[in-house]
Image (tube, rainbow, N blue to C red; front, side, top):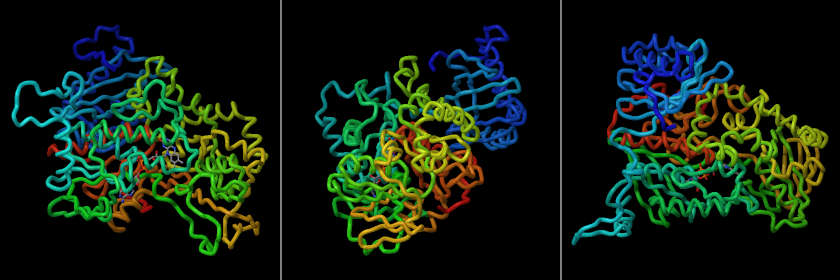
Length: 609
Ligand SMILES: Cc1cc2nc3c(=O)[nH]c(=O)nc-3n(C[C@H](O)[C@H](O)[C@H](O)COP(=O)(O)OP(=O)(O)OC[C@H]3O[C@@H](n4cnc5c(N)ncnc54)[C@H](O)[C@@H]3O)c2cc1C
């Protein structure tokens, strides 16, 4: 995405070429925008069309649909956004009646990049994203900091002295502009970007070391996503990094990253309460740092407390009488203490399978309780068919960069993404038919998502309901891990009872029962009223299981303004954390610099949890 072609001056390609077609479209589009003619610009889209904007036009993360949606958005945004300079950055490609082009453009305050898909009728999809603010560019490349200060200076302060002073003063003599609560991969990536943008930021975590979010998980855990999908911003994993990072290795990487990216990361620091002062427009956050109370007054508060961080622990009669060990999967210590013991794992998704597998390897007698159907896809198959084109060694060899892959991913509107996913999962089903047959024979209830669109859509819609199989599914299929179906109704001193009367003797019970909506963190930290005002976090409104409608078009409340001023949510998997931290960081930077940020289409609230 480097070579640019200005449609106004370089329309040299023959008229029927993809380049000429895109140039002509961009030139007409720009002139309609310049004339503030929203209807004309909207008329250049196909009847069924999608414009996904990441901050550049809407100061929001927003997809508008149909010509009416485009026109309405443009009427609200054009005057202050003042877009211009649309041009391609590489020769467009054409396939199956769709011309695809990578583009860049400018707005009144920033520079953007995007992607266009043109059909005969007009634009089918348009992605516009902000990547930098004018006058506030990151100090990269030729603009990198000098480091050394040549010459003589009696008041010289070394880099280390400056860092120490900053660390000493920030939060005490000076206040951070942003407070990020939660220093997992999400909080770390966002803080790194804010640091590069010069926004004073503190990231706090109640745990003892960066990376403890992974270190403290069950000991057999390795990342389920492959390395090409997992890079953090600025520093890529080296070429010899394992495909699936073991949890302690990724933890060490996060810890090192925190240090070299010079983050103001407060360990052993728990946010206890937060309150927004409407008059001063700042937060009043009480934290406890190494046991000592500190009050922080940031202007912006980001909850990066994890979508897989708020355990759903069921309330089952008899839990207090059970004499064995019982814990949520997030607190599972690993299998070592359970060799030869009877383990009952409640749940049948990722954590349940990983934990069952590790317990079985250690010689425990393991039973999985399946409560509802689960989607399983084999890791190798997922890598090859699901991710390979964008995130794989082959993709790298063919010149695909992480940044470009992220943009390709982002360019597909959520409304139609399942249509692209369904054929991939059909291929996966065919490839692993034998495996699915065996699984079915074992009595396991398997699904492919409500509409057959598989794992990624389940993740975006509900963040649960699947297992990326790295081996444990075979244990269930061949009966090594016993499988029972049903709802748990009671625990006795030494067993788990199910609704059909089954009794499962148990020495340890693991609740692999998933995690709650992230606005639960807002309820804990701020109050229930604020959490309800903000509403459910995550999901698309697809009207599928656990993702009630109405249709939202984007993930609820993630990385964008919420109904509570100056409150933001950040997180997701490593890919989302990397990509969307840029847009959240730019929104925060703009506010720090006093750049007007009129939000188009502020998140509406239809569900409180
Ligand atoms: C078993 C398992 C396997 C997974 N595998 C993958 C994978 O392969 N790839 C992937 O990308 N994702 C994976 N995930 C999802 C994973 O949870 C998230 O990707 C990741 O941990 C989320 O990072 P985060 O920074 O958003 O939240 P977290 O890592 O959960 O970090 C949130 C932090 O907030 C802190 N916190 C909470 N409340 C407070 C408070 N009041 N004060 C201070 N600190 C607070 C917590 O201590 C925690 O450290 C997996 C999750 C699980 C459970």
